[in-house]
Every structure is written in structure tokens, then in C-alpha cells.
Image (cartoon, rainbow, N blue to C red):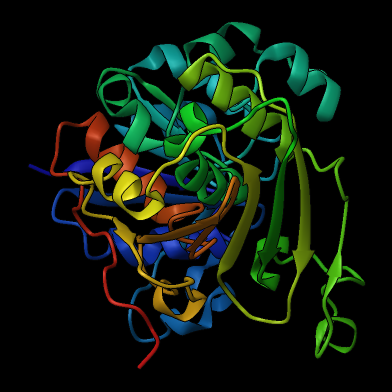
Length: 335
């Protein structure tokens, strides 16, 4: 059995990662790839020279629905809404890697722009697998989580019942340059980012409401977070440091091990985590320690994989009742 699979938005980093994993997938077969211009894929992603040749087509929604059973939307925010609104009732299963279906309608319009597909926001399942696995299995639309929320939520959620939520939770996040995408910008220009580090959108970053909203949906707890992202001069990877106050005594490592004992892609570390250990993999590494009522929680992921494309593949595997780990990368690039 092969499942006809299309990628819309193949020109970016996440589109490339999807192609690389799908080429090794036992069931999903790439039927079509779509971009903003017609050309050969290996002209845009030269690493595919002599490996895989495929023509990029201009996205035609009717054609996509006819030749696809599964569609990955790897488009910038706001650009996938038209595709979802027209594909949702066609029987195609959709994994959307943008933010277009991650937030409630009101919050999306507050932090992004007007949303024309309100009904399907309610139909979408947030694709954080460890907490929504059963819902993902029965949906036709997955909102693939953002990279910052993925690394933050996986680290923070086990501890929420034991935290003093009268205090804000501080989240210090550091991301690689690939998280900014391929679009040319001053902040990601080599001369600016090389040997440099800086915060951006402190407290007001639009992943903050995504984190808070998912915490409420999963735990029914209202939290106040102070989220501050930073850009660091590495190609891929993301490091999250969380600072909070405990309301009761716990053993952080034992709690994490118990919470994720059945999760093969969550690794509980005995020391602070390192980005090199997850770069190129689907793993999320987590560590935590405390002193008195102060707790420090530390996590890292590959932002292009667990924070985007491999998480999308894992969600699609579940949507088709396949083994969750099919084609997911497990070996880090680091020696």
C-alpha cells in the first residue's frame, strides 16, 4: 500500500526536510510537489542533485485534491488558509505546518490577521503527539505545533500541577538561524548573526499565546508566562530554559521519567541538555533540577525536525494508523 502524498511549499527548509524523510518512508509516496515557480526541485535544493529529481508545479487546489490522499502545507503563516478551506471536505488528510490553525479564532486574529476559515480552526487538532495522540488518529486536519511551543510544552507540562502559578513562569528560548526561514533579513544576515546573540520580540512574541492556550486546553490551568526568544549563530537546534516556583517538594527527574516512560522520542537527561545531541533527530531531550522552591527545566529539539517537519511526519503516520516512528530520524549529526 502506498499513500499519495503532496507537499505545498517545498522551497523552504521545512519543505526540504519533508522531502528527505518521505523519500525514506515505506508508505507515503511523493506524488506532487508545489511551489511559487515551476522548476526542478534540485535547482532549489542542490543537496538533492543526483539523489532525487522532481518538477515543482504551481499549486492548483483542484489538482491537489485529485492526486493526493495526504497533503503537507509548508507555507508561511496566512497562506495555507485557502488550501485548508477547500481541501478539508475533499477527503484529503492535511498537516499544516503554519500557525493558521494552532490558535483559537480570536487569538489568531489578534496576533496574526483576519481568518476566513473559522469553522476549521475548531476542527483542527493540535499535533503535540504526547498529549493529543488519540485525537490525532481520528482527525483530517492537524495543526502542527510551533518549534518554540513544542520544546516548551514538552518540558513544562509535567510540572504544572506542582508549580505556584501565582508567579509568572519565565521562559528563556534560544533558536538557530534556520528558524527564521529562507527570507532575506538583516537579523539573519551572516555579518549580523555571526559571533552574535540577541533577544527579539521579548514578552510580546506570538508564540506566547500559543503556549498559554495549549496549557489551558491540556491542563485547564491559566498561566502567565514571560517568553523571551533569542537568535543564536548556529544552523539548527533550539534550547529552552524555564524558571518557575514550586508549591510542593518533588523529585524533578523522577517526575519526568514517570511522565514520559512510554514515549520513545522523549529522553530524560541527568545533566543540562545540549543541542548537538538532538540536531538531525526527532528527539526532545529534557532535564530539570531544583533548589528549595526554585526549579529549572531545560529542553532542546531540532527546530526544523521535531519543531516542524518530523513532527508533521509523525502526525501523518498517526492519521493513517501507521507506526508512529516510520521515517523519523533518530541519529544526531554530532560525533
